[in-house]
Length: 341
Image: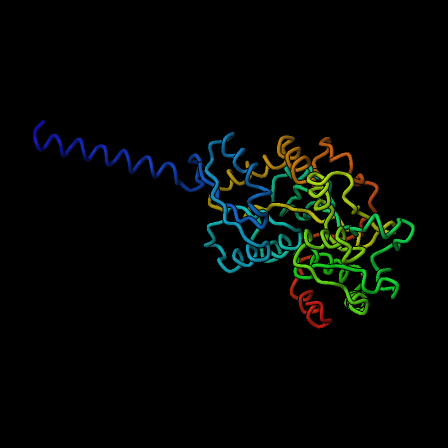
């Protein structure tokens, strides 16, 4: 092969390589999409397996940035239209509401939205819940009986609970619950509850897991947590584990069902891949995964929850738009002002 011929061959190979790269990373303009960038407020241990399954099924390469939900929401808002994120997978509806309020989420197709009850999705179609996460009171089976539990979370301000309460005030789910208190009771009502609990000298824990361990160890009698942490302990230690969940029978913010949910960014570079990912998370396969592995409530009709869970229709949830839980900044101020943080 003479020198000129070799140059022509090398040039052809280079052009083919460039064309292949350009096809793989092509923007959403009718070209195939093989890439998806997800900002996830859920940790890798919880959502890594279904993401890997999605990649296997579709051939789409998913690049995930993990962090706290509030951190991911702040990054999306700070990056604006230049954000590399295509999709936001949030731990709670409040963060999704905050991003939606700034006009950063696109409306999802009805075929996706309609798989989930209206109370678990954005009224404006900007996000959809994937799994349900119930607020409960974890209580000792050795030191508390069901008839001693107050009808609502408000009853724990009674002085008889002094020194018996555990809570994780830095936890995002706890803060979403306090936001729900602000939405349902008003600023003064939420402040009164926080001050009442503070008067009962609650013990502070770093997260839900530590709070439940404290109940089991006898440090406190009750703790304000999400429902599914208990089932991880039961799976590891068996039914003799001395803690059970209580859903406040009178309802209210203490019986709230928050969601882990997703929204596609308005300026997503790969919107079709993002919608395919939402479609997968709402599939029976993914919903069964979450029900069986994380003990959260599946939100798609026809997929059963763990039989030990109180059925969703039996929980007296408050009448609130979950997207209204976006006011985290004021909640943090209130927690600081009352000494909870």
